[in-house]
Image 1 (cartoon, one colour):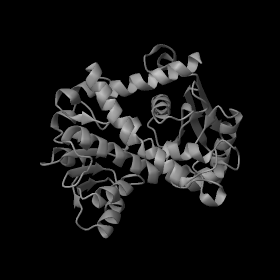
Image 2 (image 1 turned 90 degrees about the horizontal axis):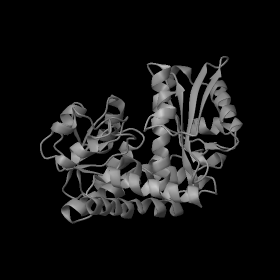
Image 3 (image 1 turned 135 degrees about the vertical axis):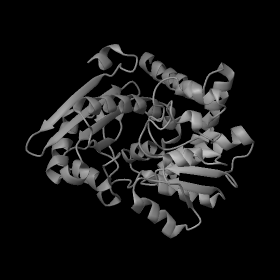
Length: 352
């Protein structure tokens, strides 16, 4: 309650606590803003340590989606949902249908999609209970895996970062470290190798690392994220797992000149963006560069067209450059510049 009504990180329009005892469903749906249109954001299925932690994550993620959707040029506000529990043991058709009924009860104020712990097949089930589910399979009228364009957008953000910092929009010859090579990270590896980059990876899941090495034996593996970010000669660091990757502990030891990755909420707390700037590290705001996926699932609502989505995701390159230019003009870090641009768009929508 304190976070929702009184903190600077609050300002959410609506938070719904959902429970279905029969299936074991416990979920939180957070709607941050509908100024630009219906709130759009994925559903995270995760074994949170407490209900309070789950609510806090839903609030933070929903707020981030408002900014992401605004910067992506979408006519959608921001929302997010979390389901509490281990998806490996708790997920069931009964639970997903119960969750879909809760989404449907909001009457279109919130549109859901995939996130950590949920997949296209899950959205197919949720969509049986509500029309407000996207990220479905092509067989069920959907766009399929949104991680494809998420990775493509991150790559465009990297190209823009390289252009801004080194004067060329290619990662050729650059050493890029990727922490997390799951749904998005493994696609990002492909883009970087095709561009001539040298790639270093790490992941807590051995099978994710093995999948990359089986296809690309020249890729290097770091023991863990700490070893990755301290590695000599690292040009770009791409956090592609969970949030909080940029913290008081990691920023001082980071060797890369650029941070550009797919993970949400990379800044552990306000102020980290200034620490990055003070060290001369260029930060491409996460919610800007990882917007390819939400561009894809939003397009599904109007009848999915991959080429149209890819063209829109390609504009992440221009948006990222515009943020860097605004940051330089205003004398602020890129994260603050992106916030200002997003807030301006939302404010103008409220007045219209």
